[in-house]
Amino acid sequence: DAGVIQSPRHEVTEMGQEVTLRCKPISGHDYLFWYRQTMMRGLELLIYFNNNVPIDDSGMPEDRFSAKMPNASFSTLKIQPSEPRDSAVYFCASSFLGFGNTIYFGEGSWLTVV
Amino acid sequence: AQSVAQPEDQVNVAEGNPLTVKCTYSVSGNPYLFWYVQYPNRGLQFLLKYITGDNLVKGSYGFEAEFNKSQTSFHLKKPSALVSDSALYFCAVRLEGNTPLVFGKGTRLSVIA
Image (tube, rainbow over all chains, first blue to last red; front, side):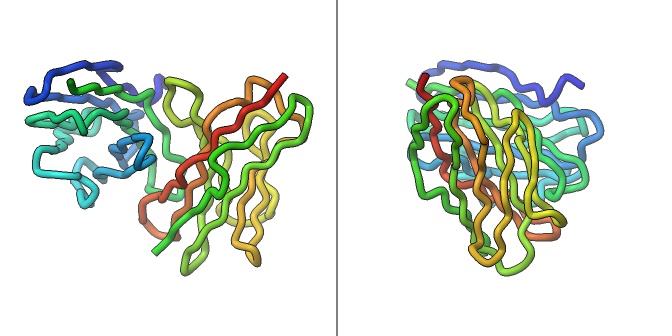
């Protein structure tokens, strides 16, 4: 299997622009997670889905952030409008049958907002 | 609520020496415990996990971890460190049932030749 695939790997954008991060989970996995990693806050869970349905979005920092999972093989995390403090690495991860099983991470999307 | 602590931000060890990266946890039930490694500019990679059974868990790249219920610890160990082990290591914990993993802040391991 190709693993969790994220795009873009790197993005530099100007403040105020819309940013869309994309994720393809491992085929057959029923849970999908979006995490954000920063030096100050470490690894934070933003939102997770089960069978394409958002279960908990309490980690989403503001209304500027939104996430969708239109089908089992694709998810997006959107920031609109973006701000410099959104600069971080955003990871998508997936697992099968929930949290007891191993969560597999993508390589991350490195976002810089200038 | 569950939480995990990695008391050391940085661990330095000489190549060939044993290494230990510490992790303690706090949960109000039976914990599921995980270790992940992150190499520079990469995602997190799974190393090993404890769910139940033998307290000594063996994982990838020669790493192992020991679950100690009385001390609520799950320290990561390796008998002989390699320079290539230099990376950021994360401990994570969750309860039984479908609750999210909670990650520690990470410990940066530097293995010096």
